[in-house]
Length: 291
Image (cartoon, rainbow, N blue to C red; front, side, top):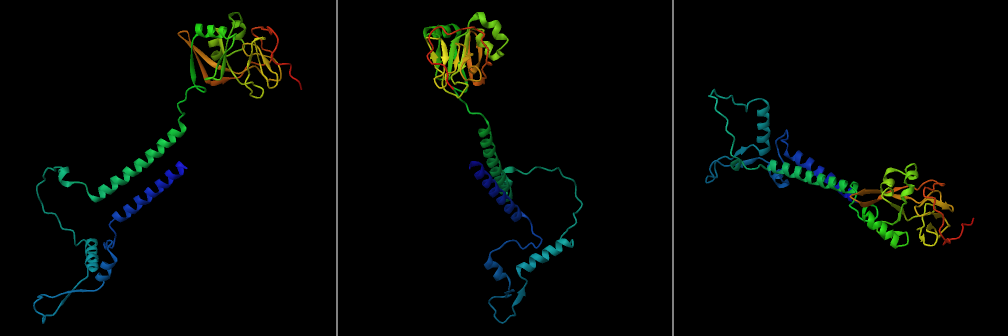
């Protein structure tokens, strides 16, 4: 809707520019544009008396204004209006004072039209850039600075092995240091950046049909209540109909501070990946999936 209004405004401005240009040209007939009453009065011959006090003298018929204008045009075309310049000494040209010359009507109109065009195009360009430029976002969909690694690991342990962050729609769990060598052959650099520091950030959605996967404190696994998919503590699939492990976010560590980029979701590992070797540590919260 906004783009359509801008296009209409530009078309109207172009029409104004064309009309102003046509009116500014010197037409071949040199008759100009006058009012209808003036044209009607100008059709007849104007008669003037040589002495208004004497009514007996003969009135003299003068040519109309239109005829005078046309005769001037003809004179210019035939060269009669050209006066040869007299020989004179060459004088140094001095620029006129801007305050004395001022701004002509045509200059004012031209500058006004150019200014209006510039304003319209600037607004249109600004609207296009605002539409194409990504908005400034915080929370989910943007990088989130979680905190120091040591504080994160302690919080995970205090919450029974799982820490849910609603602002990033993610689960944070501890990744064992002994499984790093096996992880390097499976995971990408943005994932390993946090795993090597001892933390993994998992997307809360189940890869099967998108249900939010909760933790199970007894089994120390993630268990989906919708269709029974199960994942170990680091999000690797252990059972159910899910096509892969839990998706995860890209991570980075700087000065022992973890940043999770929730705008970059990485697909979970393939079925059969089990870098930690973790088995269920207690009863499952969800039964086996049925088909």
